[in-house]
Every structure is written in C-alpha cells, then in structure tokens.
Length: 88
Figure 1 (spheres, rainbow, N blue to C red):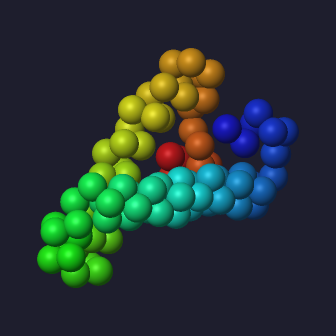
Figure 2: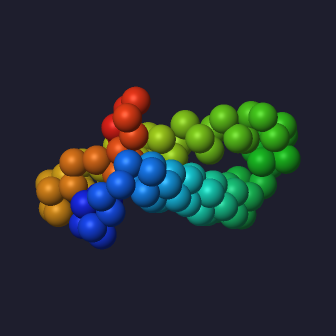
C-alpha cells in the first residue's frame, strides 16, 4: 500500500503502515464499543475492560482477514504495513 502513495523510504513505510493499521483498530474499536453497548447492554455491563478489549481485538482481527483478501483481489495490494522485520 505505501507504493501506491509513492513512499519509498523504509521509515516512511513503517510510519504509514502503523497509522493505517492503528487507525483500523482505533476506529474499529470505537465502532465495536458503540454497537455492542447499544445492541447488547446486559452483556456489555457484565464484561470488564480486559474482557471487552480482548473480545474487540479478536473480532477486529477476524474482520481484518477478509478485508486484506479484498485489498489483494480488487486492487492487488499485497502488504499494508511493510517493516524490515515483518509484513502485514
């Protein structure tokens, strides 16, 4: 994905990918919070912050897989976050 925006430096690719992935989890976490609180208030009240955070993280990670598959199939984007250690 950084190649679409002509980001060539390694540091730029790391920062760009971190912003995209971090934004997905922050915005997605807010969406999960609002939907879960509105649709299932009893379950929401019984959960601790740790339980809710883990549930939201796992749910967002599960949703990220088909989104990444769609990026690959529709726009031929292979990696969203490119670092020297790993690629997502």
